[in-house]
Length: 229
Figure 1 (tube, rainbow, N blue to C red):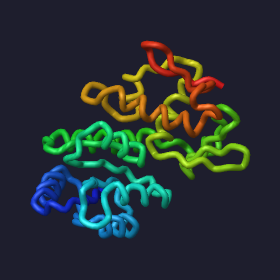
Figure 2: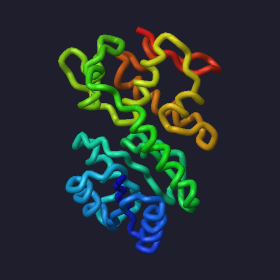
Figure 3: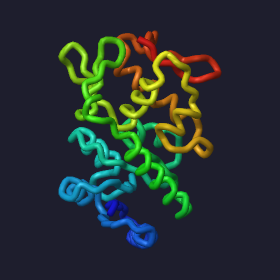
Figure 4: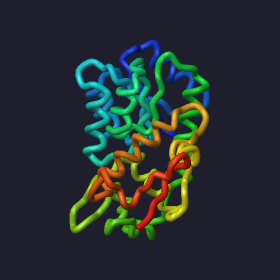
């Protein structure tokens, strides 16, 4: 059974989310502070975390940042009243896999969770691809969520790794933003393609030797992106 952890300080909201998800067949735990949520993730290794940002004590951003520093690849869906673009960009850059703004519909939440879980199960790469050559003299290490270059490890967030793999599978071909939204985020109609651009910029910063003049992740005007060696 898929296990979900809800980290939300609004107790009625947290219990309501748990009740709805349990009806859908998920096993759900609830924590109300960032510290308790972080400890529960480390102890129980859930499949997905629904994380509020404005938590007492340790904020949701801090929880997410610590998880990614630990190398924990757990799926994280941010659920927050902070809906400005800067908040979403910060969330994705910190390592979030999804971002939903309050108020939200229960069915929207369920559909987004299903998409995340489906994508994770459908994008697992066989062990033989761990250590596969990428571009620009780098190697993709799937197990460690990192790029390797010149003996140096460059950490990737789970979303950056999935984006790189999506581009790699179609290397030397143009991949549209809509394709990337579908293949990496699991949807194509309800989120701006700006999401893709933000993640591409972060991936370039890690992959390219000169991110301002990229040689490997190229923008194709009015079309999308192309990965080349």
